[in-house]
Length: 524
Image 1: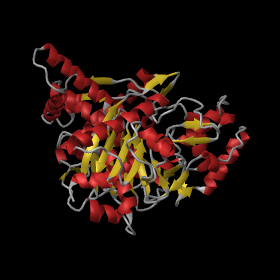
Image 2: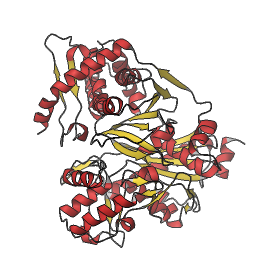
Image 3: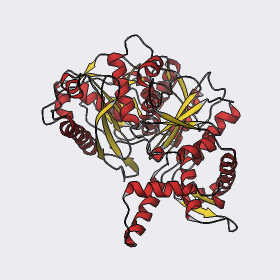
Image 4: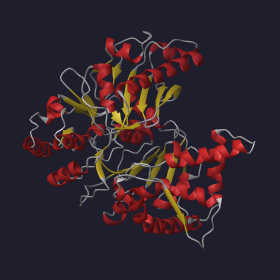
């Protein structure tokens, strides 16, 4: 069967993921090989004290991304996209979308990037004896209750971005267990019942009488069936009317879950690092953690296995700003360079820098960073007077900075909990230049790091794979399906930590820790 036949007969799966700066769609065949892609660039806004995207942004972004995919299908294969075998929706995890009984949005979307729920997160963490990060949906809801915000009595449902889009397409309020584990703690295939009871009692004490189990979306395991694209959903996704209703949708997942799937990191002792606007590491646990740490989230794989997650709000944005600055210089010099060449040049040159960055230290904080206790952030750099300041060391420090806060969180797992990791797999924009950020991360974590050929595809491809698992996985477990059907011949490259590089990264981290008080003072 040709690829054109597959597309026309719907033997394909579509994954759509809402990232922080780009919405991406990937269409795959029945072997999960990408056939076509589409994208739409967007940016969050800081309005009235919150990082947000408007509903118009969300709707326009979804439709434009799908239109871009459909145009790619038309250009490559000469056919109009009218159906697919299955669809999966993913997005940035956490955040807060609150609706009334008529499905009207009560306040603008509050994204994961906000650090405005410190009191709620602290109170819930103490109440449940379980770390509730500021990003989590329950923290946003509880903070709104504590603040006695006007919209609270009208709340009928609370959702994440992925859950909201899934609802618009299917009419069903449900999310995958991995996504749910960033809304409220889960146990098995549902929200933790004892924690739910305690949280509901706390909410009632502050005047919120709605049942959390009714307000929050239903929880599903990977592979669960039942949701289908409605007529309204098809028209919403594709206003041209070409896309037909009736397509099955798999449970929506967050970017953490799609990252684990996209890197085949769903078995114990395997982990992945997703690096874009934010950076986070996921490590599938062999046993429960003995302690509760504000720097460590406990979430799940899409099939419900426990995962330790270190999530950092800041990663590539400051790095990208410096690349843009050097691009402006190249333009002024009369020798302009395209973006890809700029990244390649600056990344490769960073390999020539000293392992400790020559005493140069950078902080990439454009927003708050809970791992280091910052409610807001300001980019900062400093250098030791006796160090070696050149472009290689400066840009190497910027790359280290993108991983430094993650390193602080992972050290808790390695040193306090004695958690073991056989390998991490990196994906996302930071790893597109082969062998640079990958080597630095291996040195920093002192663990081998692999990057697969699909590293640039990221979560949209992982979401398409989850849709394929629902459609074609049969009785296989998710780990078996990934190992035996998806990644059996996947190209990848693994780099081991370099001893000198690890010593240099450790020296950089000493300087980094020493500079944190100054960063906190500047941010405040």
